Length: 264
Image 1 (cartoon, rainbow, N blue to C red):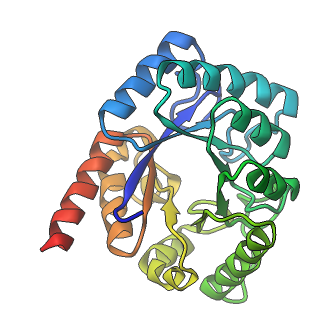
Image 2 (cartoon, rainbow, N blue to C red; image 1 turned 30 degrees about the vertical axis):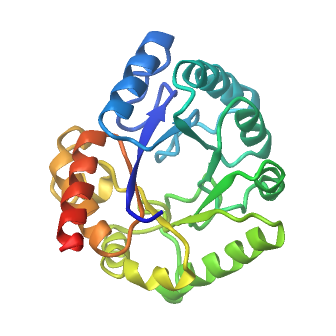
């Protein structure tokens, strides 16, 4: 990546924190993807299971049911689009790749299902490794850090080394804003994001409409677009390569302004 890009979120779930239930029918999915691509998204990230606090941990079969048909439909109508699957399960990742996905976005950073490394290596898929602490059931609870930045850096050193052992060439890191971190820790991470540049991996940030924004501002996710734009701009200034967002147009505008500033 020689310039930052935008990844568009497409949740095929009934219960995601912001857009749950909006994109579960074919017409709605295609309309949204067409809009996201037109607005400038480089990647469409498809997820079938919500990871919001207190979300239901659905079965592998249900997750497959939610994502594979949409992936088929999107790949058929937009064959040039770069698709990503948001999953921690190797079977879901493999089925998604077989139907047109080229990026695996694992919120567990390869800790829930190690075979996901095998799948990424087998199909030469790019792999996104996100940091979290605790299990899927406890990852939104307060966690203990000896040193926030050092602990997360150590996690990525270990997991990127594991990816290298499997022969995976394209690895992206995601510090996991909102996962296993307090509001204060999230902002400390944002402020010190450049520390992770030493890993020499592209860095994805997922800040879109998250509670670290709307709780601080005493508002709602629906009213957190302006805050999202602000933190996305800060993230770009601090080394982000990929903005994962609900609102593509505004994120693309952030990137354009950032590029203008940095081309001068």
